Image (tube, rainbow, N blue to C red; front, side, top):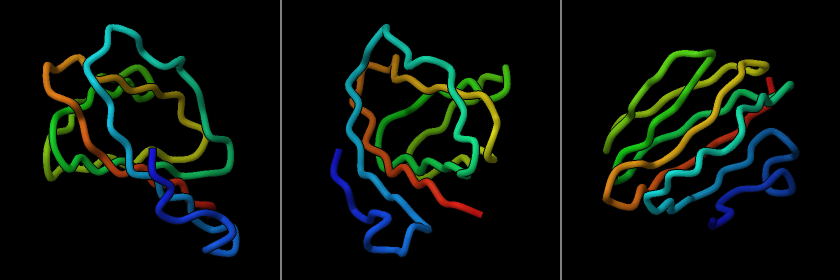
Amino acid sequence: MIFRKTGKDTNGSLLQIECFNPRSDVREPIHIHPKQESSCEVISGKLHFLVNGNLQVIEQGEHLKIPAGVPHCFWDDDPAEAHHIQRFSRH
């Protein structure tokens, strides 16, 4: 993870992280961000998201927004490493 923007940089309005995820059979736990909208933009590779019980796959050049309070998790089960930008913003 590379922290590109933090709350300190944006007066608490945005956290932006550049991430690299190798293929893994382990998914992160399903969780929510109670007060933050989250989004993901895939730079290369592919990510699988389970958002509110629905599977969504995003690939290079695509992005996904998840409203605050919505249960979700993501993982990379593609052979290629996923390079992506995660953003968390307060509304």
